[in-house]
Length: 178
Image (cartoon, rainbow, N blue to C red; front, top):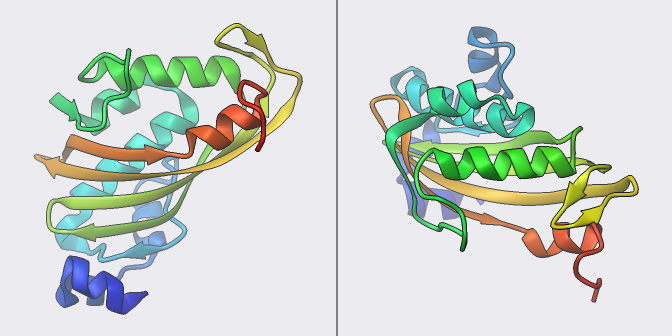
């Protein structure tokens, strides 16, 4: 795995690994990565922006999204129907938290190199709310997502993301499990 990461991110970035506790101590209320690769004092702003964004997904707190995202934020993998800019994640989070009020977001691993951060996220909770006209019955929700952020001036300026939406939709009963 480290060889693969070295090819993609450069040997120097991979060699500079810091403990997730380094950043947890600075902001204990934010979601901390279980594994942090390439995080060091030189890119603390990138790590902080990514932690704020994961914490936004966990809490639904719009203030965290506004602190994490640049005013001109661009979603480079914008789903159909979602507004561009900060309004997109705000609307998506509201829909998710309505469906899964106990939503948890864990950062399984975070890889930092230069102005880029890759976050491998794990979402879990229970579908007790409503989503697209379907009322939840307490089904377990458990899926992953991977985000690639470009950080500028300490905030996420661009995001390329991939969520396991099929698993989510199957778990809540909107799509038959295959």
